Length: 108
Image 1 (cartoon, rainbow, N blue to C red):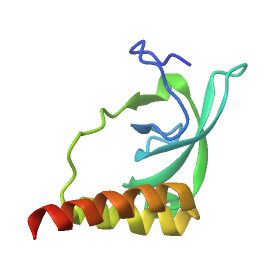
Image 2: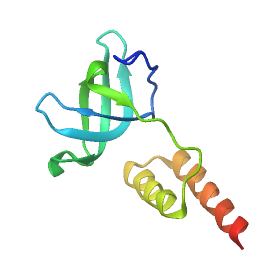
Image 3: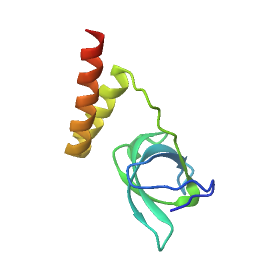
């Protein structure tokens, strides 16, 4: 699904945007409705703390894809592992844990 920047969005992409109530959000795409050109975004950060942890519907025109970095430091991985646990995403948790373990092994 294309957003206003002509970037293809897919499930699990990290996005930033402004909700219809003007709240700034950063989160990831939980699911998509192609027919309505909408995405459901699980909010990780927001200037409205009540939204954090909730999944909210947004138009694809309200969000912008956040390019993923290829390297994450241990702190970022630990944060993402906590997020995977809180969202119940076992596959992501396993992937992040393996990445963190590999990083630790490389350092030692």
